[in-house]
Image (cartoon, rainbow, N blue to C red; front, side, top):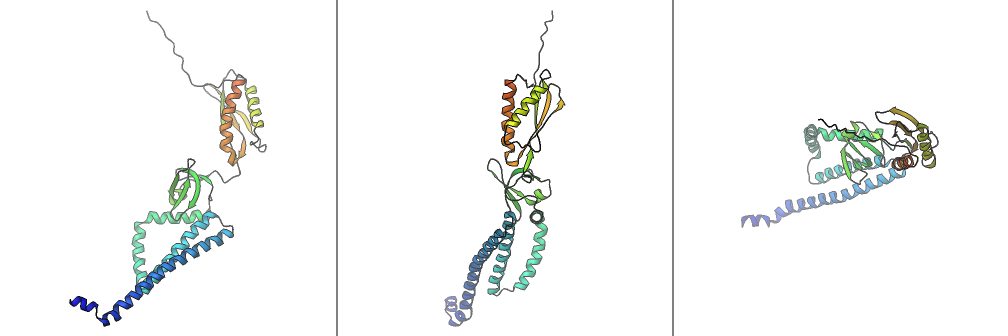
Length: 274
């Protein structure tokens, strides 16, 4: 009964309950409205950067940083409304941040690597790259990881430190690529005839560029075949289409012209012992 009496005390309600209720409501309002404003400002920033023809990867990365900073400001404002001293809180956050930084040094390394990827831009969104042990199309560079899409439509998230700290192969960086192929023929076959067949196939494919001119040359006298190098140049987007088509066309053309393609085989001799 004494506790109920205290709660019903008008002086207690006037001095404590009402002011704190107002502070809590105000803090919640600041947080909700502030978060909405932070999102609006972030979207506005991204639109401005996009209209300025900035790279999509840079737009997403900076947008994430802007939203994080704005949200931190909103949280500090809400805490200040509750009467919490933000200056002392910042000191506590600083000390805690040092401890957390030591514990999360890998995450900080991923963040710094992400910043370096944005600054030096070895690739952009939409490029097909090989990095961090993964091959795929870059979809987004986040604060701590890069999102890639593989050829079979799998999403792979690779830590930024693995990408920046290793070798990056960007297959989309140049407009053209060279298709390297090797076709083996038998030692009894006519090399000149085989080269003419290959030249005809390259000339008939409109995707193969005239400049630089394709290279057709004997590259190796192997153990069981004469290996002919075929190296045409194509647009980067036509690479795999030309490669797969040439594999089939060369086999069919060699069969039609009586040119053999050696393959490993063994001969077994049986001897009868009396």
